[in-house]
Image 1 (cartoon, rainbow, N blue to C red):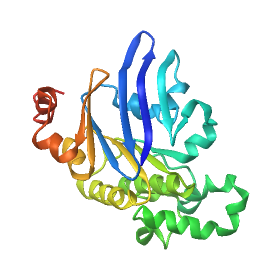
Image 2: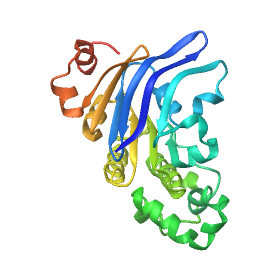
Image 3: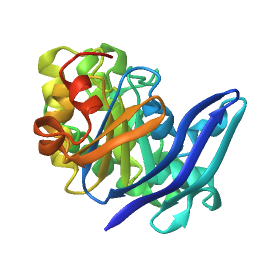
Image 4: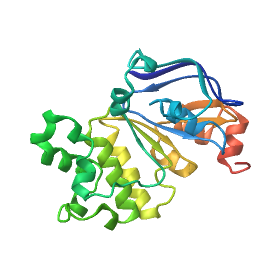
Length: 247
């Protein structure tokens, strides 16, 4: 099932042409790894999926981005961002308790208040954090380690019931053990969610991605099954990047 269909997409932050004639599809319940050097258009592509680019000055877009068959520009922004959550590079917990961090978004929906405890617990379980925090739900989120804070942010995203999770370098500041836990959570979450992961860590892309997209200078150079991208890419530039010859 196609989750996103992107056709003839161009994005400018004038005068910069950030994404050039992008055409691709993203399948439901896959992990799509997105790799490429700095200024290749990766993050612009990711932020386009839930219309975060619109918050920047001089933004201009041409082409079509359909989510479940509907133009994202015709979906109310608040509704779209509830369906398409995002986890950023640096953990951004709120100055609240662990419990209240996860419950924050849910509290805007009155019909869920009676089930709040269950929602928070399930979200923390899906983020593989429940066993580590279940006895300190009332403690400040700032007392958690960096890796735990990142998984708390994942739980906060899950609690509002998204269909898609966008990850923008979620492990860039984490140690290998914490990175492994986040990656383990991703692999489990794809059973229920569609995941798009932007990463500068090509080994991480290879570990978790079902498919991998390689971006360069605002263009999609190659998109294929991850095994093929990392063993027999079709484009020499892809092979050069994976081997560390540039980037």
